[in-house]
Figure 1 (tube, rainbow, N blue to C red):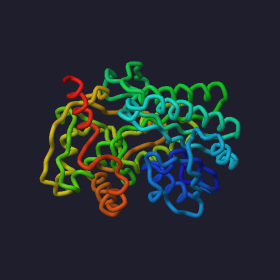
Figure 2 (figure 1 turned 45 degrees about the vertical axis):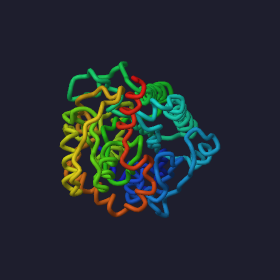
Figure 3 (figure 1 turned 120 degrees about the vertical axis):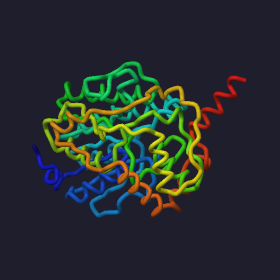
Figure 4 (figure 1 turned 120 degrees about the horizontal axis):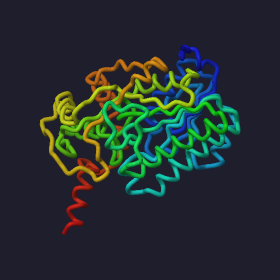
Length: 351
């Protein structure tokens, strides 16, 4: 098995969506591993410039993956490896804006694959979504061979579409593609917002001593994966030729109840406001999520080592250290979640 700590030395790496939480942490890791250049392409639609590492071997290009001029600019640098993390994120956003979701997640992925073939990219690592493409009826733990066409949001459909395009470019052009399927990533670098994940939103509200809204009963589970573990999985996937053409779960392999998550965050932030229960969103059809990471372990040596409590503490510490900037950039009305908004909207429609 290739030593990934040596693999990236002297290489040029492109990260689309590199200003996001995973991208920023991946950028810092690649820079430390001796990459000659780490090129970030991001339009900052769901990220912030202040979290991008300011390092001599990091080049930031502001723009969309749909912008031909920006694509020609970054691929002129002849990157050896592409980490395609950019996406129109996520489920509720895609329900509200399905056409933009298709453009970014579909056409954007296709363009990056085309430019990668044209310029001789060696490895293409695609960030897929295990939470999305397995559907709601696959048996647990979710294994890579289980897939579903019964998807419940445009985001889930277009993440699947991206995988299918990756398959074509791998088979037809021999592009070494690895499809990495993320499960509920969290950790330092992710700001809260109307369309963001539950953990940064919970931390944001808890630090303001607000009640945490839970969609459903609270017994629903998710496979929360710390951002540092996902970054290591991405590095291993890129460095190992055996991973080419494969789809790989990057997860913790453990279930956590949403009510336990909420109680932990309230406890660590000393939030006395507790929780409240609101209606589930129509696209949220999965009561339980837990991934098998056996394939990732055998194929690339992936073994997450961050406990859930430790990861949450790290995320809270990052919030405290960057509170003024996070509060400024949070993109929803304070104290209101998309779950609450959907619940209110559904009530209005029924009248």
